[in-house]
Image 1: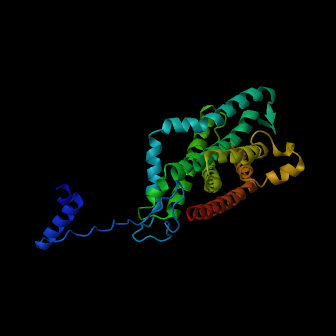
Image 2: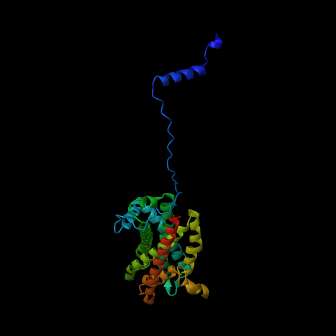
Length: 310
């Protein structure tokens, strides 16, 4: 009896045959799974090659202006803390060294020491603030927050972003330099009318060190890289550029090449103005500072494009 009963497999096969013979439509064949195209996600701060065109259709004529205004609006939220942070160190240096050492060094080159130091403090404050903005802040927007990549989705080019960052860093430096200039006037360190002529000098110093800072920003892979700039470039430049003492006190071989440094050129123009005298032949130093600024920005643009093309 059991031997004549069909097993489960036979029943299944007979049932399937019966269904097919009854004219039921066959089951549709299983479709192959869809394969989505692969996409490579770039690492932070390294957009894919070809993603930054040099010409963008529909680009405004002054496309860098909205980027500059964007940085200004963000800065307004922390304006007080930012200004205090940028001017704190130069201001403390001016007051501590000016009034402290000024009791021991009554005059330097026939000038009260605090007045002598004031000119150098204006230039040093501008250089430090512009460098800090072009390094730490610009690197955060470029690499960490990836703000630059977001901006480039609009009809913008990398040149627009770089010009805006350059001008904004120079503006931050000018804020700091002008704040020191106000302190000089309020404390009656100098109230010479020629102080107003320091404004274009401050602007040129800001542009110069903003361009230099953007060069190092393009080479950086992390915040620690900026230690090389401040330790090996900016700090030695401050000490040999005549900010604290005349360059003539240095060895001749140091004094000769230090005279060509951008901060030394700025100090040579600023100091006579603080003392109420025309700078004489030192005006041509502004031309050299302009060359430094243009070359620094051109090199920063080239290095940044190379970074974004990787």
